[in-house]
Length: 454
View 1 (cartoon, rainbow, N blue to C red):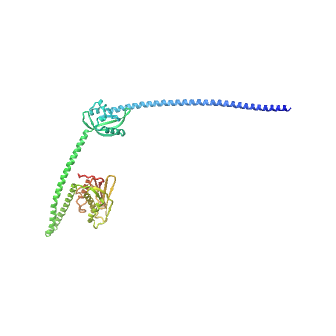
View 2: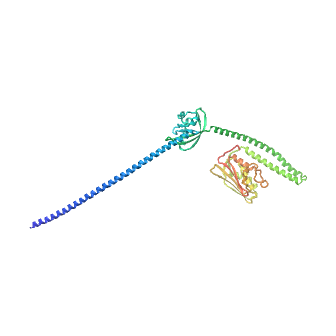
């Protein structure tokens, strides 16, 4: 009985196991069936996606093909138009090249070979077109080949250059030419375009004019020298008669006062003053002429030392005067010390003279040195000044802007200043305001430039 029960239990357990196994098998089968369904759907979905991708790719490929065809068509049309335009441009250029009134050459910048010429060029050079096309630019340019190649290289780097050369013609004659050179694109390559003008006659006219000017300058210098010598001789000869005239007037006043009434004394005073003034003018003229004839001794000159020597010399004119001196640092220059002392003596004495009506005179002496290669000196005062509308007379010989009754002088000092400064290679100028003062400038080059013609 126990064995029977055991058998029943085993059967029940077996039934349960079989049922559980069946359930698992059913579940697994169901799972596999679902997996198959999902896989099939997935395959269908992937297939559908691949079909869509194929269609989209085909559409994109078709669009790209259309775009490429359109671009190619447009490129062909543009290339055709450019070709037409280029042909028209080249034809226009060829017409302009062939019919231009100036000689024209096209040059290969690599070796200087002449690759095209117009009819004017063949006429000018005297060669046939065929002969010119076998030549190089160095065959007609008289410069060394290296210099010609250098000029061609510069044109390739910088457009629109002008040159002046000598070209040799077929008959061996030389002509001066002006060449306009530029780099252009012609026939698919870069060439040099030369426009050539014959300037031989112009150059001859310029040379003739230059020679005529030099001859005229030489004649003017000779006549000026003769005139200076005559003026010097006359001025020197006038000094003795003037001294005699002044001396006899003084003797009359001294030895025969009882025979002289007031009117005669006035006449004698006028004669004496006029003769004295004329004597001063003669002395000034002689000084001016000597300044142009004397040789220059160029040495190093200290303007600090020079100005103190000038002030010591003019000390007598300063006595009793209230003068404020403002003297800046002054450089050393190369020049003639005697002449430069005359310049400073004239300018400083003028400043002292034209400030004598001021209760407090101010005189400034300064120098600036810039990058212009020159020292610029100035002498400034707060004196009588001058009217700038008469400036053109200021440095002229015997020209004065103030009355002799107000300020004595001969009109020689500033003319001497200008002449001396110009002989040193400098320049002189001035600024003034009536009643407020003036400033006189002169420049001296940092490197001496002596002009013996002045």
